[in-house]
Amino acid sequence: MRNKRMLFAVFAILMLAAVTSCGKKTPDDSPNNLTDPSASKSDGALTPAPVIASEPAEDLMGKAIDPLTGFWIDQDTAASRPIAVVFNNHHKALPQSGIGQAAVYYEVLAEGNITRIVGIFHGLDAVKLGPIRSARHYFIDFALDYDAIFIHHGGSPQGYSTLFSLQIPYLDGLALEGVTFWRDPERVKISGMYEHSSYTDAEKIQAAIASYGYRAELEESPRIGFDFYPENTPPAGATGATGATDITGAADAVGTADITGAAGAETLEVQYSEDYQSTFVYDGKDKVYYKFHEGEPHIDAETGEQLSVANILIQFTSISDIQNDDAGRRDVKTVGVGTGFLITCGGVAPVTWEKYSHQSPTQWRWEDGSEIQLNKGKTWICVISPDTPLEIK
Image 1 (tube, rainbow, N blue to C red):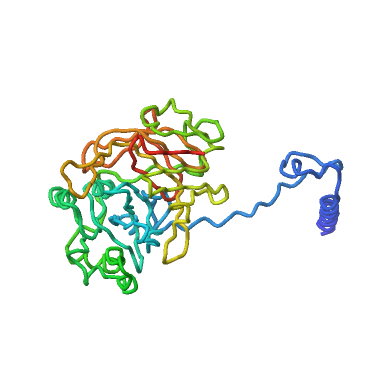
Image 2: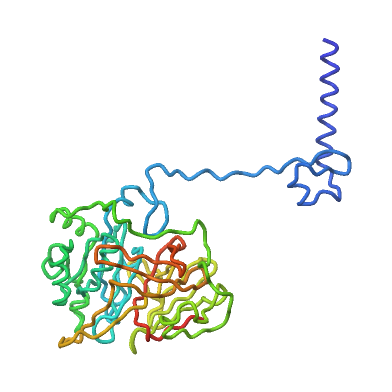
């Protein structure tokens, strides 16, 4: 018993000495020593390793990677078929509703000087979506890239011909007005706004998909979507140059064009036509590019939030007028091969694209032939001809 008491006393003295020593500030109490368990204090006591509070692990049960954004989402949503929506992008149509929920955006010229936007949605729950506009045949390839159900209101002769020949699942506001689509009551009161007033919503879309018996799940093959960097990363192959670089017509010189690097790809301007310019401005804090339309923030009417994306892809391709088309409609080459740029995380690098059939997804590659990676988040794809005025600052 006496020995046990002596051992306890010695142990208590040692513990008191250790506590006194740890509470004493000495010149050796530097951050470097505090993180090194093997570093010794001047009195010979070991510096304890710091206690680091670990963050609770994210519960990933029932979740899967979204192939369109790289984020974890509900596994049922990840396995569901995306929705492709043709948005009216006419000045009078703005602001659009529900457009901020899209995961991928395509902007491309239609007839005249206007552009239209095809938004690809995964897990759509918008209560108001539109205004919806008519189909063009090359829009359908954007939907096919993601095995998406195509949503539009009307279409060109070439658009309908492509829908029928390729047997694309679609919902047409021209046929479903009053059922799946409706006219905005405020817009139809304004002169000249009727063609900019067609809307739908997620609930009506899902009901129509079920009514038509369309497949609601993704096909396992071919694979859709993108590969993603694990964390924010400038694109591979980006140069280190800074400043403003005009890369107009650079499609013929990808790899040799003097493009800007991570410090310089902070602003992108795409002049689709005299009347339509898209501008993207990088926010280093949020790690996204904010979208502007003709110099004004591009806003979702339902949320009031400005559209933003993590990645921008420039797709150079052939755009020409359709012969003997009285409306001045265009043909846009979507099947074939071409060049472009990836702009992400403040950097820019040349890329190539290839699509060998309507049913095969477009593949984006670095110049060495390997598949590109994107940063997690949304992507905007500018489909333009090589002579489109394009500037990266």
